[in-house]
Image (cartoon, rainbow, N blue to C red):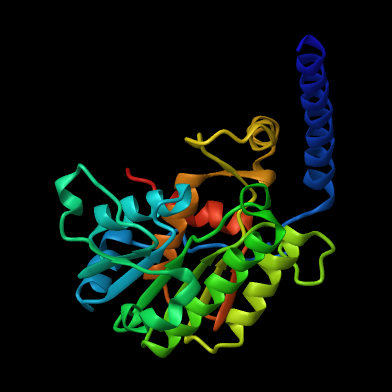
Length: 273
């Protein structure tokens, strides 16, 4: 038992060193590929929110039970920019706050999404924070959730009238990557772009700074070390606020990819004064 404990400690130490070196390397060798993507700091958010609110739009959120999804829902409910908010997931969520009582919740079987096409109809904006991990679901399960479920949901949303689709992806997403995680993220980005939404916003945050309810030792180590490097980490609240602020703006490109710095800048604009 003692040897087993020492083995785990040694493994964590090696992971710590590796993550620290990787963070330092990426910090100096991977600059933001979109340095000119800067939000207009003259934006008057209260005015923009009211203008958007008057359009009487509705939205849906996929993955509201996850860390980003929960924070995104909180930001959306507080801003009150949508006339209707629908959560689409595999189970009904419970909320104590009465401000959530007007939420619409739709339970679906992601293995049979075609049977739930009606759930995706009539929404102007869609947010997708759906995802799992290879450790939890296995390689095939990870691809099924992060690619197949996400893509099929986007297809149904497009057919149902959604015009602006938001996708939480990951820093380094690349369909030609040799790493399953980054390859899958990059591939689903490319496949959704082909659907032809009027506007498709992709968010590629770095390591998310959040205290998860579930235990992920390696991710905990990554947060501790990468939190030192602004370009390699970002608070999850900042990501959620960036998604809301970006919803209020008029995108200049049909498909826009927001890297970590652009997300951070937008999120700061959404901070409550």
